[in-house]
Length: 135
Image (cartoon, rainbow, N blue to C red; front, side, top):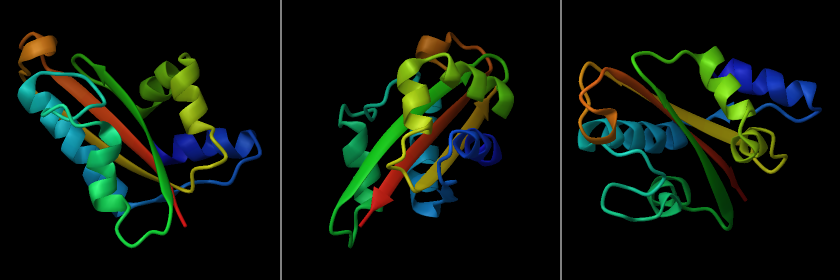
């Protein structure tokens, strides 16, 4: 997934993103929460905006920071190529991937055999990408 995003960025004349374990942990937390609780949204399960969830890990010690997020799910499976294609078809998601502001990205994917709520008990793969920059 990271290679695919960075390939798109290079073709657009942008610097590649570095993998961030901090952003990756926040992304994985969101994907796992969505699978467990049966929702699909940027806001956390408790209703907190996504940037607060990400900032709780990412903004520590930073003078300034900014974050963005892409989400995608597919039933039963999702691969990197399909996720990239879906995001490229969405102006907001495409803009996030190709923003010159971002310097790092964290990716978190989960697959569950049966997810509740909006997933209607189906097998699903959920991917969260958290983009960020710190100064």
